[in-house]
Image (cartoon, rainbow, N blue to C red; front, side):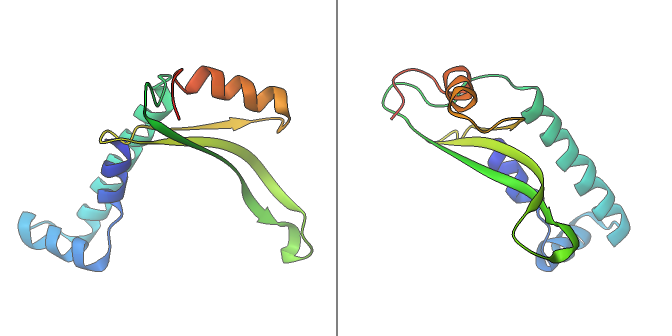
Length: 120
């Protein structure tokens, strides 16, 4: 559900214009409330410590580093490692968790806490 809500909040020009026409609100008001809504969804996802997946539900897990290259040179990236997951089900539940270390013990711990047994 949250993934769908976040996707709806991504305002393209067409969606932004449509919201203005439907509500009669200004562009600045639409932008302000879309930002508030995105923050509400982000807070809910952040506070939700539940598990994704379950019996016969496929859970996809991946890791990414979010940041930028220092001085736009070389390959070293300053930033944070994030482990995330999404389930292939109607609910499309998701999680994202910042981790300090990217070692096997940390990855196994996150998967055990955040992915339900029986997931594919």
